[in-house]
Amino acid sequence: MFNRRQFLQTTGLSSFALVFRNSYAYGTVTKNKPIVISTWAPNAKANAAAWEVLGNNGRAVDAVEKGVQVPEADPLDQSVGYGGLPDRDGKVTLDACIMDEMGNCGAVMFLEGIMHPIKVARLVMDKTPHVQLAGEGALQFALASGFKIENLLTPESEKTWKKWMKEAKYDPKQSIDILDQQSKKNLPGQINNHDTIGMIAMDSAGNISGACTTSGMAFKMRGRVGDSPIIGAGLFVDNEVGAATATGVGEEVIKICGSHTVVELMRQGMSPELACRKTVERIIKKHGTKAKDLQVGFIAVNKAGQFGGYALQKDFTYAVQTKAGSKVYNAKSIYM
Ligand code: SD4
Image (cartoon, rainbow, N blue to C red; front, side):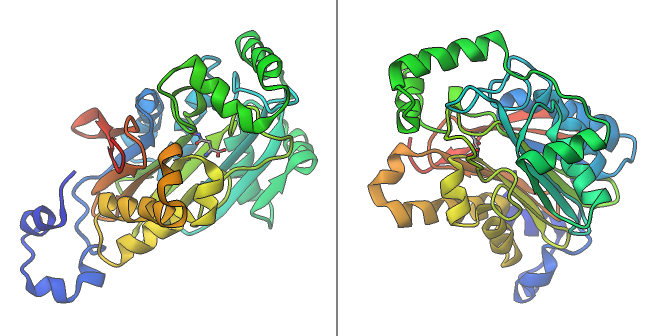
């Protein structure tokens, strides 16, 4: 990660270029490619899968589709795909979206019984005239496309849900408190209640794509859809500028059109980290001190291959893979 001044120094651009700041940042300077970046440290594994595509000069969109399937299939990841914590009725419901360098996008939401919602989202993008399919219709489309229904509720997640049912008595507002008790330092969107994977990649051709997939907030109301499958909220890509993706309390991300906001701030010349910070600050502006009880984090990449992240609360991590190897970063945060 480097800041704007370092970027200018590195690229040899003079202050003259600042006059044209809306064009310089997205010019031909793409030293740091290919690159893949994902929310949360454990998703370094997902980056490695994406790298198998990127390292072979593959397309970013194929890389992110492949990468995010790692946590989707991981029963130990209780926030994505198989093994995800269910809604308050005990059903695992999945949200996912994908967006490519041409601005094509596809999403599924409130999808049940399909291990890899991202693959269905890709097919919505590639094979239908639509962008979003939800619930029964999304499932019908998945089955017609050859996917099989599987039980995604693992015994471990069922146990956690039953414990929650006993203590929270079906009140979704209490899910957050229960999760807090299970892991003392939790805030909504952290530790037990996180791991939504948002992944952004730029390939060796300099094209940017992204994917986002989740089982959403644990013990949510049935039918609840978060930010993750919503283009502009959980994910946004503009191949001229860069891309961003989000994790945390989806309702808050939707209200500020989070990922789109990050990209638009980068378009104005902000570094990825600063754009993420300014976007997070909008949540504080809306909520004041109440924001102290929320977690939202963003990561972003720009066309120059610079990357960054920012969160409301500490302990938001992200994983980055480049030719130089794999690295995990602790994002800066507003609250310490
Ligand atoms: C959601 N943003 O469904 C997701 C959940 C999440 O960390 O990211 N948790 O609201």
